[in-house]
Amino acid sequence: MPPTGAEGERRAAVLPADAHETTHPSRPLPVDVVPHLDPAATPLRVYLPSVGRAHVARVGRAVSGAAVDGVRVRAAYSIKTNPDPRLLAAVRDDGFHVEAISQSEVEHAVAAGFAPHRIVLNGPAKWWPAPVTPGPFGAVFCDSVEELRETADRPHGGAPVAGVVGVRVRPPGVTSRFGVELHDPSVLDAVVGSLSRLRPDVRLGLHVHVPPRDVGAPRWWELVDGVVRAAAELESRSGRAVRCLDLGGGWEPADLLDGMLPRLRRTLGGVRRRLERLDEVLLEPGRAVAQPLVALVTRVLAVRSAAAWTDVVVDASIADVPEIGRTAHDWWLARPGHRVPVLAGGGGRVLGRTCMETDVLHDRLRVPDGTRAGDVLVITDVGAYDTSKSYRFGRGDARRPVDVTEV
Image (tube, rainbow, N blue to C red):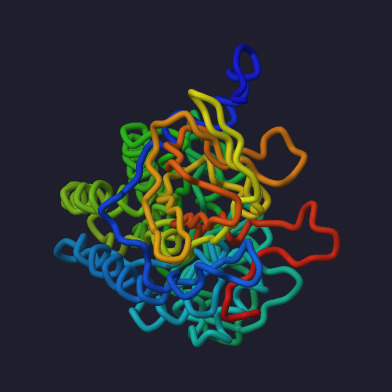
Protein backbone atom coordinates (compact mmCIF):
# COMPACT_ATOMS: atom_id res chain seq x y z
CA MET A 1 0.00 0.00 0.00
CA PRO A 2 1.13 3.63 -0.38
CA PRO A 3 3.62 4.81 2.27
CA THR A 4 2.49 6.99 5.14
CA GLY A 5 4.18 8.93 7.94
CA ALA A 6 7.94 9.39 7.73
CA GLU A 7 8.19 7.08 4.73
CA GLY A 8 5.56 9.08 2.89
CA GLU A 9 7.44 12.30 3.61
CA ARG A 10 10.69 10.73 2.38
CA ARG A 11 9.02 9.55 -0.83
CA ALA A 12 7.58 13.01 -1.40
CA ALA A 13 11.11 14.39 -1.17
CA VAL A 14 12.23 11.93 -3.83
CA LEU A 15 9.36 12.88 -6.14
CA PRO A 16 8.90 16.68 -6.18
CA ALA A 17 5.34 17.83 -5.67
CA ASP A 18 5.07 19.55 -9.04
CA ALA A 19 6.89 16.96 -11.12
CA HIS A 20 3.85 14.86 -11.97
CA GLU A 21 1.00 17.32 -11.91
CA THR A 22 0.94 18.39 -15.56
CA THR A 23 -0.77 16.20 -18.10
CA HIS A 24 -2.15 17.04 -21.52
CA PRO A 25 -5.10 14.71 -22.11
CA SER A 26 -6.08 16.67 -25.23
CA ARG A 27 -2.74 15.88 -26.83
CA PRO A 28 -3.13 12.68 -28.85
CA LEU A 29 -1.05 9.58 -28.43
CA PRO A 30 1.87 9.99 -30.88
CA VAL A 31 1.15 8.04 -34.06
CA ASP A 32 4.67 6.59 -34.05
CA VAL A 33 3.85 4.67 -30.87
CA VAL A 34 0.72 2.97 -32.21
CA PRO A 35 2.47 0.16 -34.15
CA HIS A 36 4.36 -0.78 -30.98
CA LEU A 37 1.52 -1.08 -28.49
CA ASP A 38 1.83 -4.86 -28.56
CA PRO A 39 5.61 -5.21 -28.65
CA ALA A 40 7.40 -8.53 -28.37
CA ALA A 41 9.57 -7.16 -25.59
CA THR A 42 9.26 -4.27 -23.21
CA PRO A 43 10.33 -1.79 -22.01
CA LEU A 44 10.88 -0.15 -25.38
CA ARG A 45 12.01 3.35 -26.26
CA VAL A 46 10.38 4.80 -29.39
CA TYR A 47 11.74 7.78 -31.31
CA LEU A 48 8.91 9.95 -32.68
CA PRO A 49 9.71 11.25 -36.18
CA SER A 50 6.18 12.64 -36.49
CA VAL A 51 7.03 14.99 -33.63
CA GLY A 52 10.74 15.49 -34.25
CA ARG A 53 11.28 17.78 -37.21
CA ALA A 54 8.15 19.84 -36.62
CA HIS A 55 9.13 20.49 -33.00
CA VAL A 56 12.73 21.30 -33.92
CA ALA A 57 11.50 23.75 -36.56
CA ARG A 58 9.17 25.40 -34.05
CA VAL A 59 11.99 25.88 -31.55
CA GLY A 60 14.29 27.16 -34.29
CA ARG A 61 11.76 29.76 -35.45
CA ALA A 62 11.08 30.89 -31.90
CA VAL A 63 14.78 31.27 -31.07
CA SER A 64 15.52 33.22 -34.25
CA GLY A 65 12.43 35.34 -33.64
CA ALA A 66 13.83 36.62 -30.34
CA ALA A 67 16.43 38.69 -32.24
CA VAL A 68 16.42 42.48 -32.20
CA ASP A 69 18.13 44.90 -34.57
CA GLY A 70 21.84 44.18 -34.52
CA VAL A 71 21.66 41.13 -32.23
CA ARG A 72 20.90 37.71 -33.64
CA VAL A 73 19.80 34.85 -31.40
CA ARG A 74 21.03 31.39 -32.30
CA ALA A 75 20.36 27.91 -30.92
CA ALA A 76 23.22 25.50 -30.21
CA TYR A 77 21.65 22.13 -29.43
CA SER A 78 23.31 20.43 -26.44
CA ILE A 79 24.59 17.10 -27.79
CA LYS A 80 24.83 15.46 -24.36
CA THR A 81 21.08 15.83 -23.84
CA ASN A 82 20.43 13.19 -26.49
CA PRO A 83 23.01 12.43 -29.20
CA ASP A 84 20.58 10.46 -31.39
CA PRO A 85 21.76 10.87 -35.03
CA ARG A 86 18.19 11.52 -36.20
CA LEU A 87 17.82 14.36 -33.74
CA LEU A 88 21.19 15.79 -34.78
CA ALA A 89 20.13 15.58 -38.43
CA ALA A 90 16.94 17.50 -37.63
CA VAL A 91 18.73 20.34 -35.83
CA ARG A 92 21.46 20.40 -38.50
CA ASP A 93 18.93 20.79 -41.29
CA ASP A 94 17.13 23.53 -39.38
CA GLY A 95 20.30 25.60 -39.08
CA PHE A 96 21.11 24.99 -35.41
CA HIS A 97 24.63 24.97 -34.10
CA VAL A 98 25.53 22.27 -31.56
CA GLU A 99 27.20 22.47 -28.16
CA ALA A 100 29.84 19.87 -27.27
CA ILE A 101 31.67 19.20 -24.01
CA SER A 102 34.24 16.67 -25.25
CA GLN A 103 36.22 15.72 -28.32
CA SER A 104 34.07 12.59 -28.55
CA GLU A 105 31.04 14.83 -28.97
CA VAL A 106 32.92 16.96 -31.50
CA GLU A 107 33.69 13.81 -33.48
CA HIS A 108 30.02 12.80 -33.29
CA ALA A 109 28.93 16.24 -34.49
CA VAL A 110 31.35 16.27 -37.41
CA ALA A 111 30.17 12.79 -38.42
CA ALA A 112 26.59 14.13 -38.32
CA GLY A 113 27.49 16.84 -40.82
CA PHE A 114 28.33 19.83 -38.63
CA ALA A 115 31.24 21.94 -39.82
CA PRO A 116 33.52 23.07 -36.95
CA HIS A 117 32.23 26.65 -37.19
CA ARG A 118 28.80 25.33 -36.12
CA ILE A 119 30.19 23.74 -32.93
CA VAL A 120 30.29 25.51 -29.56
CA LEU A 121 32.80 24.03 -27.10
CA ASN A 122 32.12 24.08 -23.36
CA GLY A 123 33.10 22.14 -20.26
CA PRO A 124 36.23 21.73 -18.13
CA ALA A 125 38.07 19.13 -20.26
CA LYS A 126 36.98 19.91 -23.80
CA TRP A 127 40.35 19.36 -25.51
CA TRP A 128 41.21 15.91 -24.11
CA PRO A 129 42.86 13.82 -25.39
CA ALA A 130 43.47 15.84 -28.58
CA PRO A 131 41.37 17.93 -30.98
CA VAL A 132 39.70 15.82 -33.65
CA THR A 133 39.50 18.81 -35.98
CA PRO A 134 41.64 21.95 -36.14
CA GLY A 135 38.57 24.19 -36.30
CA PRO A 136 38.06 27.05 -36.19
CA PHE A 137 35.10 26.37 -33.92
CA GLY A 138 32.09 28.60 -33.63
CA ALA A 139 32.82 29.43 -30.01
CA VAL A 140 35.02 28.22 -27.16
CA PHE A 141 34.10 29.10 -23.58
CA CYS A 142 36.85 28.41 -21.06
CA ASP A 143 36.13 27.05 -17.61
CA SER A 144 39.10 28.66 -15.86
CA VAL A 145 41.64 31.44 -16.21
CA GLU A 146 44.29 28.80 -16.90
CA GLU A 147 42.27 27.38 -19.78
CA LEU A 148 41.67 30.86 -21.19
CA ARG A 149 45.42 31.47 -21.19
CA GLU A 150 46.10 28.11 -22.83
CA THR A 151 43.39 28.68 -25.44
CA ALA A 152 44.78 32.10 -26.31
CA ASP A 153 48.20 30.48 -26.81
CA ARG A 154 46.92 27.35 -28.60
CA PRO A 155 48.59 26.84 -31.99
CA HIS A 156 46.05 26.83 -34.79
CA GLY A 157 47.88 26.98 -38.09
CA GLY A 158 47.25 30.65 -38.78
CA ALA A 159 43.47 30.54 -38.25
CA PRO A 160 41.79 31.52 -34.97
CA VAL A 161 40.88 28.66 -32.65
CA ALA A 162 37.28 29.90 -32.75
CA GLY A 163 35.20 32.81 -33.94
CA VAL A 164 34.30 33.55 -30.30
CA VAL A 165 36.49 32.88 -27.26
CA GLY A 166 35.51 33.69 -23.71
CA VAL A 167 34.90 32.33 -20.24
CA ARG A 168 32.08 30.72 -18.36
CA VAL A 169 30.99 33.00 -15.54
CA ARG A 170 30.15 31.73 -12.06
CA PRO A 171 27.71 34.34 -10.76
CA PRO A 172 27.93 35.50 -7.14
CA GLY A 173 25.71 33.50 -4.82
CA VAL A 174 25.67 30.45 -7.10
CA THR A 175 27.35 27.29 -5.85
CA SER A 176 28.99 25.60 -8.80
CA ARG A 177 32.13 23.71 -9.72
CA PHE A 178 32.21 25.53 -13.06
CA GLY A 179 33.34 28.90 -14.30
CA VAL A 180 35.30 31.93 -13.14
CA GLU A 181 34.23 34.51 -10.57
CA LEU A 182 34.47 37.78 -12.46
CA HIS A 183 33.14 39.57 -9.37
CA ASP A 184 36.46 38.72 -7.64
CA PRO A 185 38.90 41.56 -8.49
CA SER A 186 41.92 39.25 -8.61
CA VAL A 187 40.14 36.87 -10.99
CA LEU A 188 39.02 39.77 -13.16
CA ASP A 189 42.63 41.00 -13.32
CA ALA A 190 43.79 37.55 -14.42
CA VAL A 191 41.10 37.33 -17.11
CA VAL A 192 42.01 40.77 -18.43
CA GLY A 193 45.66 39.72 -18.57
CA SER A 194 44.81 36.55 -20.49
CA LEU A 195 42.64 38.46 -22.95
CA SER A 196 45.64 40.58 -23.88
CA ARG A 197 47.11 37.44 -25.47
CA LEU A 198 44.00 36.76 -27.57
CA ARG A 199 44.09 37.47 -31.29
CA PRO A 200 42.36 40.73 -32.24
CA ASP A 201 40.21 39.00 -34.88
CA VAL A 202 38.57 36.77 -32.24
CA ARG A 203 35.29 38.02 -30.79
CA LEU A 204 35.01 38.05 -27.01
CA GLY A 205 32.16 36.16 -25.36
CA LEU A 206 30.79 35.30 -21.92
CA HIS A 207 28.83 32.20 -21.01
CA VAL A 208 26.54 31.54 -18.06
CA HIS A 209 24.78 28.25 -17.43
CA VAL A 210 22.50 28.07 -14.42
CA PRO A 211 19.46 25.83 -15.09
CA PRO A 212 16.34 27.95 -14.51
CA ARG A 213 14.63 25.03 -12.75
CA ASP A 214 17.34 25.14 -10.06
CA VAL A 215 16.90 28.80 -9.13
CA GLY A 216 13.50 29.84 -10.52
CA ALA A 217 12.86 32.19 -13.42
CA PRO A 218 12.99 35.50 -11.45
CA ARG A 219 16.38 34.64 -9.96
CA TRP A 220 17.62 33.40 -13.34
CA TRP A 221 16.91 36.76 -14.95
CA GLU A 222 18.68 38.49 -12.08
CA LEU A 223 21.74 36.32 -12.75
CA VAL A 224 21.64 37.21 -16.44
CA ASP A 225 21.54 40.90 -15.53
CA GLY A 226 24.55 40.33 -13.29
CA VAL A 227 26.46 38.75 -16.17
CA VAL A 228 25.65 41.78 -18.35
CA ARG A 229 27.08 44.02 -15.62
CA ALA A 230 30.18 41.81 -15.46
CA ALA A 231 30.50 42.03 -19.24
CA ALA A 232 30.38 45.83 -19.12
CA GLU A 233 33.09 45.87 -16.45
CA LEU A 234 35.20 43.45 -18.48
CA GLU A 235 34.87 45.70 -21.52
CA SER A 236 35.98 48.70 -19.49
CA ARG A 237 38.98 46.91 -18.02
CA SER A 238 40.16 45.02 -21.11
CA GLY A 239 39.39 47.45 -23.89
CA ARG A 240 37.71 44.62 -25.82
CA ALA A 241 34.01 44.57 -26.64
CA VAL A 242 31.87 41.65 -25.51
CA ARG A 243 30.28 40.53 -28.77
CA CYS A 244 28.56 37.29 -27.71
CA LEU A 245 26.57 36.11 -24.70
CA ASP A 246 25.78 32.41 -24.25
CA LEU A 247 22.90 32.01 -21.79
CA GLY A 248 23.03 28.21 -21.57
CA GLY A 249 20.02 25.92 -21.43
CA GLY A 250 17.93 23.82 -19.08
CA TRP A 251 14.45 25.04 -20.04
CA GLU A 252 11.38 22.87 -20.35
CA PRO A 253 9.89 23.18 -23.86
CA ALA A 254 6.92 25.32 -22.80
CA ASP A 255 9.08 27.48 -20.52
CA LEU A 256 11.42 28.28 -23.39
CA LEU A 257 8.76 28.91 -26.03
CA ASP A 258 6.14 30.70 -23.96
CA GLY A 259 8.21 32.41 -21.28
CA MET A 260 11.93 32.79 -21.82
CA LEU A 261 12.07 33.73 -25.51
CA PRO A 262 9.35 36.42 -25.44
CA ARG A 263 11.02 38.01 -22.42
CA LEU A 264 14.45 37.74 -24.03
CA ARG A 265 13.23 39.72 -27.02
CA ARG A 266 11.84 42.41 -24.70
CA THR A 267 15.13 42.49 -22.79
CA LEU A 268 17.71 42.51 -25.58
CA GLY A 269 17.26 46.15 -26.51
CA GLY A 270 18.32 47.22 -23.03
CA VAL A 271 21.22 44.77 -23.04
CA ARG A 272 22.43 46.19 -26.36
CA ARG A 273 22.41 49.71 -24.92
CA ARG A 274 24.75 48.49 -22.16
CA LEU A 275 26.93 46.34 -24.45
CA GLU A 276 26.95 48.44 -27.60
CA ARG A 277 28.86 45.98 -29.80
CA LEU A 278 26.99 42.86 -28.74
CA ASP A 279 25.85 41.11 -31.91
CA GLU A 280 25.00 37.53 -30.90
CA VAL A 281 23.20 35.63 -28.16
CA LEU A 282 23.57 31.86 -28.01
CA LEU A 283 21.09 29.54 -26.31
CA GLU A 284 21.65 25.83 -25.64
CA PRO A 285 18.18 24.25 -25.78
CA GLY A 286 18.85 20.59 -25.14
CA ARG A 287 15.93 19.57 -22.96
CA ALA A 288 13.55 21.92 -24.75
CA VAL A 289 14.37 20.27 -28.08
CA ALA A 290 14.80 16.60 -27.17
CA GLN A 291 12.25 15.99 -24.44
CA PRO A 292 9.09 15.52 -26.59
CA LEU A 293 10.84 13.34 -29.18
CA VAL A 294 10.87 9.95 -27.39
CA ALA A 295 8.25 7.80 -25.62
CA LEU A 296 8.72 4.73 -23.43
CA VAL A 297 6.45 1.69 -23.79
CA THR A 298 6.29 -0.48 -20.67
CA ARG A 299 4.11 -3.45 -19.71
CA VAL A 300 1.98 -3.87 -16.59
CA LEU A 301 3.18 -6.88 -14.60
CA ALA A 302 0.84 -6.73 -11.61
CA VAL A 303 -1.98 -4.64 -10.14
CA ARG A 304 -2.57 -4.35 -6.39
CA SER A 305 -5.69 -2.49 -5.28
CA ALA A 306 -7.67 -1.40 -2.25
CA ALA A 307 -10.56 1.01 -1.85
CA ALA A 308 -8.49 4.20 -1.95
CA TRP A 309 -5.34 3.24 -3.81
CA THR A 310 -3.90 1.17 -6.64
CA ASP A 311 -0.32 0.09 -7.19
CA VAL A 312 0.71 -0.85 -10.71
CA VAL A 313 4.00 -2.72 -11.16
CA VAL A 314 5.63 -2.36 -14.59
CA ASP A 315 8.67 -3.84 -16.30
CA ALA A 316 10.40 -0.46 -16.68
CA SER A 317 12.27 1.09 -13.78
CA ILE A 318 13.87 4.28 -12.59
CA ALA A 319 17.00 3.09 -14.39
CA ASP A 320 15.17 3.44 -17.70
CA VAL A 321 13.82 6.93 -16.95
CA PRO A 322 16.16 8.33 -14.28
CA GLU A 323 14.70 11.87 -14.41
CA ILE A 324 11.06 10.77 -14.36
CA GLY A 325 10.40 12.79 -11.20
CA ARG A 326 11.91 16.03 -12.49
CA THR A 327 9.53 16.85 -15.30
CA ALA A 328 5.96 16.32 -16.46
CA HIS A 329 4.96 13.48 -18.76
CA ASP A 330 1.84 12.27 -20.52
CA TRP A 331 0.75 8.74 -19.60
CA TRP A 332 -1.45 6.45 -21.69
CA LEU A 333 -2.91 3.02 -20.96
CA ALA A 334 -3.29 0.80 -24.00
CA ARG A 335 -4.44 -2.65 -24.99
CA PRO A 336 -5.82 -3.80 -28.35
CA GLY A 337 -8.74 -1.52 -29.24
CA HIS A 338 -8.46 0.49 -26.03
CA ARG A 339 -6.35 3.61 -25.42
CA VAL A 340 -7.02 6.09 -22.64
CA PRO A 341 -5.00 8.94 -21.14
CA VAL A 342 -3.98 8.40 -17.52
CA LEU A 343 -4.38 11.59 -15.52
CA ALA A 344 -2.55 12.85 -12.48
CA GLY A 345 -4.20 13.62 -9.18
CA GLY A 346 -5.32 10.18 -8.04
CA GLY A 347 -4.24 7.63 -5.47
CA GLY A 348 -2.37 5.33 -7.81
CA ARG A 349 1.32 4.60 -8.04
CA VAL A 350 3.40 3.13 -10.84
CA LEU A 351 6.17 1.04 -9.35
CA GLY A 352 9.29 -0.09 -11.17
CA ARG A 353 10.46 -3.69 -11.24
CA THR A 354 13.68 -3.23 -9.22
CA CYS A 355 14.43 -3.65 -5.53
CA MET A 356 15.17 0.05 -4.99
CA GLU A 357 12.86 1.92 -2.61
CA THR A 358 13.10 4.95 -4.89
CA ASP A 359 11.86 3.01 -7.92
CA VAL A 360 8.52 4.84 -8.10
CA LEU A 361 7.71 6.21 -11.54
CA HIS A 362 4.58 8.06 -10.44
CA ASP A 363 2.81 8.35 -7.11
CA ARG A 364 -0.36 10.34 -7.89
CA LEU A 365 -2.05 8.78 -10.92
CA ARG A 366 -5.72 8.05 -11.48
CA VAL A 367 -5.30 4.44 -12.58
CA PRO A 368 -8.14 3.55 -15.00
CA ASP A 369 -10.64 0.93 -13.84
CA GLY A 370 -9.93 -2.48 -15.28
CA THR A 371 -6.18 -2.03 -15.56
CA ARG A 372 -4.65 -5.50 -15.59
CA ALA A 373 -1.42 -7.38 -16.10
CA GLY A 374 -0.41 -7.37 -19.75
CA ASP A 375 -1.69 -3.87 -20.44
CA VAL A 376 0.78 -1.36 -21.84
CA LEU A 377 1.63 2.04 -20.41
CA VAL A 378 3.10 4.70 -22.69
CA ILE A 379 5.13 7.49 -21.10
CA THR A 380 5.82 10.45 -23.38
CA ASP A 381 8.41 13.22 -23.09
CA VAL A 382 11.37 11.01 -22.16
CA GLY A 383 13.64 12.19 -24.97
CA ALA A 384 16.09 14.24 -22.93
CA TYR A 385 18.06 13.00 -19.91
CA ASP A 386 15.58 10.19 -19.27
CA THR A 387 17.14 8.69 -22.38
CA SER A 388 20.77 9.78 -22.27
CA LYS A 389 21.23 9.08 -18.54
CA SER A 390 19.44 5.72 -18.54
CA TYR A 391 21.50 2.82 -17.28
CA ARG A 392 21.35 -0.95 -17.00
CA PHE A 393 20.30 -2.24 -13.59
CA GLY A 394 18.72 -5.49 -12.48
CA ARG A 395 18.67 -7.03 -15.96
CA GLY A 396 21.51 -9.49 -15.79
CA ASP A 397 23.02 -9.47 -19.26
CA ALA A 398 19.94 -8.00 -20.96
CA ARG A 399 20.26 -4.73 -22.80
CA ARG A 400 18.61 -1.55 -21.59
CA PRO A 401 15.55 -0.34 -23.53
CA VAL A 402 16.48 0.56 -27.08
CA ASP A 403 14.81 2.46 -29.85
CA VAL A 404 12.65 0.14 -31.91
CA THR A 405 14.51 1.06 -35.08
CA GLU A 406 17.77 -0.20 -33.59
CA VAL A 407 16.63 -3.64 -32.41
